[in-house]
Amino acid sequence: MAELSAFNFRPGSSVLHGLDVRFKLIFLVLISFTSLKAYTVALSFLTLVLVAALMHSGLSLKSILKTFRYVFVLLAFIFIARALSTPGSVVAEFKAISITREGIYYGAMICWRLVIVILTGLSFVLTTRPSEIKAAVEWTLNPFPFIPAKRIATMMSLMVRFLPVIIDQAKETADAQRARGIENRKNPVYRFGKLGIPLMRRTFARADKLAVAMEARCYSENRTDPVLSAGIMDWIALCGVICFCLVIIKT
Amino acid sequence: MNIIEIENLSHYFADGTCGLENINLTIREGTFVVIAGQNGSGKTTLLKHLNGLLLPTTGTVRLAGVPVSENLVKARQMVGMVFQDPDSQIVGETVCDDVAFGPENLCLDRSEVKRRVSRTLKVVGLLDFEDQKPHLLSGGEKRRLAIAGILAMEPKVLVFDEPFSSLDYPGVKQVLKQIISLHRSGHTILVAVHDLEKVIAHVDRLVIMKDGKVVKDGMPSQLLGELEAFGIREPCASRLGMEVQSWLN
Image (cartoon, rainbow over all chains, first blue to last red; front, side, top):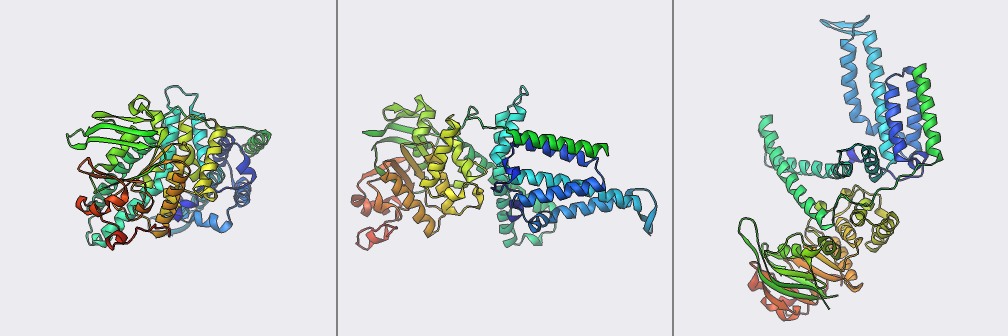
């Protein structure tokens, strides 16, 4: 569970904590898209701003690096694939494989941009209550006819709530099978079946119990609406982010 | 005043199995009743009829004189049910969100929802955990959160299905203390258990079920000697001829 807890809401009183969730959602989209157009100087600036914002929100540099330890593995794959597949001036060569200068540069840029997107997402999740995210999803989907916004928002929040429980169950089932020597069976399909079927059975049984428990608490789609309110700070922040994104795109 | 009146209640499941057979029971407001029986004796099936999660095949269940089937939302607000597995009952991503779930379903004002959440978390002693993820709580804390989620709907009757299952000793004490304090604050309490040891010292009335029927109903002290005939373990102190002691002493 520790792996998951880094991407959790942390209570606090930072500027980001105080902003309206809808604005934060817009910032997330704007900064993510703008980072695709950014190069070294803009990316350095964005990284500094985001790391500072995360630290201001209560996350230490060590925790940020710890959160990224698995992401770095993924980024390493992307970097290697890009370095090996981009044509250009060769830096190193081994048989048919060659690493190019352009490949290294573009690989590094893509990885850096992905880091920016993840840092932006992290600062959003870290400073926003899950109930506010649910409210923002509901608010965003409300104008679209034929889309059951409340149901989608509830399903999303239940998914967030039950993901750790399902992971715990998977771990427990895997441990129980290891205790009975499943590791001696080398066939991955056999092992996957033996883990997947009981896990799915337990998950569906839990979903049934959950539905009854929700019914017992009078669940209906006609519920108290979430309260979302935008203040002057939100508009100032929006102007700042838009200007910043325009500068990056123009340069 | 009788808050729950059950008349000739029978329930048959879709496959034809008999869940309950001709149950007649009245429960006075403010009493603490324990329903005991082996696994499969019909305790949970009976409890689910009290808030309309199951409806009778024959017979009626009335809450304060009104049949449950007439207004299910009202019945569920009036009878709060705490399930055996709190992990399946807790729906919020944080403690605070979970407690707000019930009041939000009742379409209360946001300010009233907030008031009820704070008040309830204070009652169960989880005020410092309001932003905590529910899956990170201990067993006893999860059970108290499940109780808080129900209390926020301000029910008159609280129904607990095996409230002490899979809890360690401190967890049992926490939950028992909570149940007793809720009884003292005027709630009618119904607890379904298969092991009476932890709760028997505090209850006003003992109902024993077997094979979907109520087989005994009376004062706990009068029925202790007959428990084992129905597959329920007699409390240790009673076996030794001593007075039954509270787990809180």
